Length: 442
Ligand SMILES: NC(=O)c1ccc[n+]([C@@H]2O[C@H](COP(=O)([O-])OP(=O)(O)OC[C@H]3O[C@@H](n4cnc5c(N)ncnc54)[C@H](O)[C@@H]3O)[C@@H](O)[C@H]2O)c1
Image (cartoon, rainbow, N blue to C red; front, side):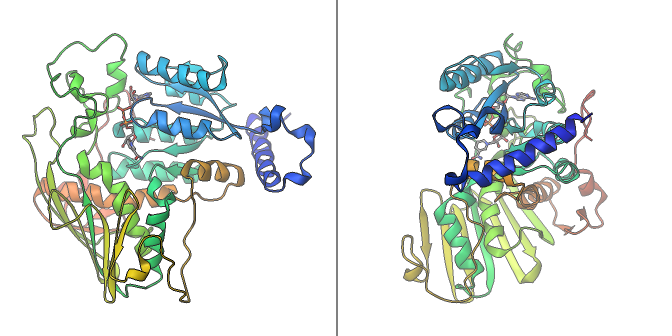
């Protein structure tokens, strides 16, 4: 008798073959196709989505556009958000098949679900991702990889242990201008890179328009606040620090720094070829509201880091000398890139839209033009995605270290191979957080 896991492997193999067949439509027998040339149901990737706030709906829509996957389940701790998710999915497929879940563990226990999309607050990333790995799901997970380095390491280990495909929401790698800038740097056009400037936003943004709702009150009946707080310290409910605005309180998120480091520093590392290494020295300074403020994350910050290969990287928010985006400065020139197709450089030939010089050797980086499509393709082929879990881990570690240095008010030395802060017990304790019972990591 076959076990459920061997059945799953066979199904995966089938998905892999279906992917190969899709590239050669002339040889696909018609009986393996579903109606209207849609992939037959048993060759589709079944997806469960967790979290329906700022990011969940967009990710889900991008998956629903793809014909070889099917969103079959939605999960949220807020009944209103959950209903919106189910309505959206069922409206798209014109049926009532999307099942709703309050507890992600119940959803992930379903053997027919192949992959999950996690768009939940940072303090939940590790528990949900590790559970998904345990249940043999592939994962599209949001940046930053997790709220602490210890949690990030737990996710990386679980992904490897269970052989999962992981895509991080660091989607900038799947867009043309960031890709081009990283290739220019990696190919050596700007010479030996000496400095990199990474500019991130400052302050706090009232995404949910709840800034004036900071009175302590009973949580609304539609929200399971106890589970929403999850492994974090229990603090009184305030509407202004749950949905979307949780990122402005260190109990749940890491402010602008941790919100953005997985975007622009991720790109900086890509251009440098630093996806598997980290800084050696980190010194952060920041301006913080009082620790007991309703929103207490740093409003202004600057992190100076020395990396191997004699590279210095500055990450800053609220410092006008560091422009938003990523700027690499080398011995022979510079290049700067940001969202909205912005790209400028010291040599006009490299300008946005212009062909790159026909120089050899030219380094070609992994090319993906659709981040969600890239995930689905890799689920089928079992190849690595454009932003696999180890990349996400290294892209965000400097943000965590910068925050630790800012909070301690001193420079720290990081052993990036051992993932340990050298000779500083107090700082090492800040690599993780205590979990509130009954939640346990691992
Ligand atoms: N890649 C990007 O460009 C991008 C942009 C925005 C946000 N994000 C990331 O997406 C993640 C979600 O952020 P957001 O702004 O969408 O948050 P949000 O608060 O808007 O939405 C999160 C939703 O998850 C639900 N939730 C919380 N814990 C849950 C749990 N244990 N199980 C099920 N549901 C749970 C909440 O009720 C809420 O509806 C964060 O990690 C954030 O950094 C990424």
